[in-house]
Image (cartoon, rainbow, N blue to C red; front, side):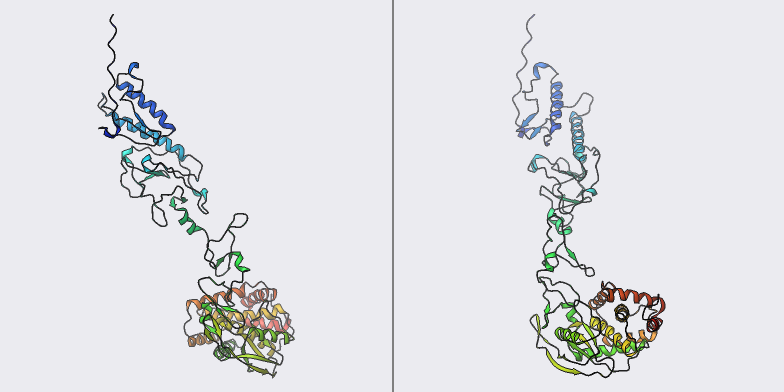
Length: 516
């Protein structure tokens, strides 16, 4: 028998750039080896399945371009009438979905992008940016299979078609639609941060979550244990680096906030600093304080606690107040700094005669005069530190006037917790009447409330800034940690709330202690 004729020569290799049939470009992976075998088998069966033509070197085999991409020629129509290209495309998409689901099955907190080689060949992965908590990421199961022509961008909600796309969190995006939830710009970096299902640039996520120092305006550094450590004011919630407590950063003598580097405080001549908000209502000399002093005396009269004696009141500097404390034989003083004093001894003190003027960020030109104080009754004078806001000055006056009232009414030899505690209660009650004038309190009579509202109306409506300062001064009184001022206030306040002010004072006169 004559030998069979030799097989026809293979057609010349086609140029990839001139393929007339649609092609599919995908990133090569481990699974693509299996796909290569699949398409190799399909190519062989298309030529009749003979072993003589199945070497894989002919023009009908898939072409591999370098090491990254492969091109698969779309086959002819199958005998059953279904286009082969659709069947193979669905097989390819299903294989890709399985591959992606393997990536999504990684531990929680690990996320990955996928894209074809035309986007630069990079495979960015989500990183732990800032303080991102990986426990918030859901675990993803097998991704729902979609034919490639039905992929919908989760950003713009348009079909992706056969163009470049990204896959993240089980959904697809056009590369330009995968955007930062904070700034709205596309995420093109290799690493990004996630909060729930919202992606962020690492820098944007840090801006949102990493605390900044409100003094130096920089990100608060980590300590030796790689933890973010900072200080926070219990009332103002001002966050700052721990180093600013020791680097001579100015602190307001009234509200205790630290000076920010972009807002400068005023410097008083006695070395104290005053912030801009406290400066707005600061009382600077004795003449300016007289209307407030008389208003508080009226408040006492409304409580049926009239002061018959005219007790002198002077505003003084810090040094004068400290010297007066040394010359005073009796009394318990608030440390580290006393801001008011009820004198019972004769002394010569230097009072503020005329308020200082502003020169840059300093208050200069303070005029003082010495004044000899003679004792005409149990109380010689009341001294208050100058340069404090109106509400703080009034709270100090209310406290010191209570000391004077106790001495003038014959309350003798009280222990510091009782005397300072009941004085703090009167200070707190006056602040409460100023900051919360509409609040009902069973501790004060209606006449006291009317007197307080009358004095407030003469002063005019207080700003939100001043009201907030008043709330802070009340917070200071209520949360004082000292045994006499803090513990004494809480015990006295409980007694006044339970029995009323008058019954509490009567009990103190008889027993020297608060009623239980």
